[in-house]
Image (cartoon, rainbow, N blue to C red; front, side, top):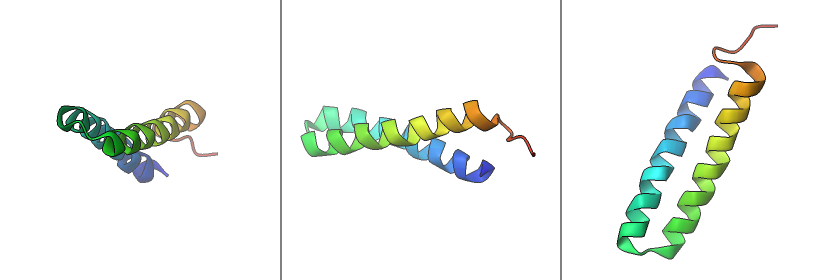
Length: 59
């Protein structure tokens, strides 16, 4: 789960970058998908850190 959380955090960061690029290019569909993916992956990472801690606690 630890490595998966790092990968999801990188996806969320890249989604934020894509949001800024889609605003610059005035691409509405890319903006919607970028915001949605950043929100979903970012929320997953935040809740995983809050619930399990980082590094995750072993039983």
